[in-house]
Length: 80
Image (cartoon, rainbow, N blue to C red; front, side, top):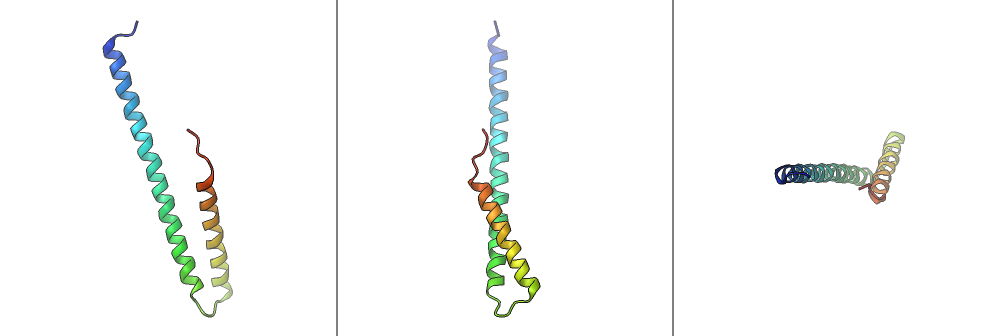
């Protein structure tokens, strides 16, 4: 039979691991949110231009594609 001390030690260790995993998941979400906001700001700034060069139009298309990718990744269910 497992001793009470070992059981408490294992329980505390598992709790610390789960807390660490939770913080890691939140950190990744905050980075994705910051990237999404930056891309949206860039897209907005490019859309405000009256006359666009071919490079600016291509950049806007790439930014919009990246925004769609980030949003679709956020909509996917995560593994537990």
